[in-house]
Image (cartoon, rainbow, N blue to C red; front, side, top):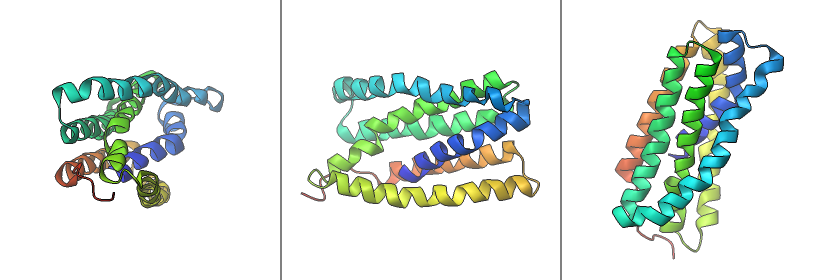
Amino acid sequence: AHSTSNSFAYTSSLWLPKYLHEKFDISKGELSVTAIPYGISLIFGPCVGYAIDKHGSVYFNKLQQRQLATSVALIGQALGYMMLCYAASAQEAIIYISCAVVCKTFCSGGWEASHNDIAPSASGTTYGISNTVATLPSVILGPLVAFILENGGNWCTLYKLIGVLGLLGAFIYHSWIDTFVHIE
């Protein structure tokens, strides 16, 4: 889940300006619109975390909360990226990316919070290790995106591939996650 989420975030921040410029002829001076999705997530992030903390335990046990939040995060991001294939304008593309980035805020109540569940006394350490490992696919993804685009691939193929990886990440998380304490 962590690798998948990082891959979405790094792909968006690194390649969104080039995508908008190439597909919709957005001038370099107008590329500041790529900050809009992240500005929107500044509002939603705390709201999502609060809602999960305040209301999640009323309806779901801890494992179900983590699974639901992570599913919304990963599947929502995957669908947002896949929808870029069908964007007819730069504004529509920004809406799809904004939806994907807002879905990412659900990670706060999903896989990100699970570190405290499984290792309460070492959650910072486990998160640090997880983040290091999760960054490796993103390091590979940048050059891979460039390779795909330089060798006949297109943005739609790329975003569908990233979407499928997101769906796979959600499936793997659902299959393997637990909330039992493993490190005291």
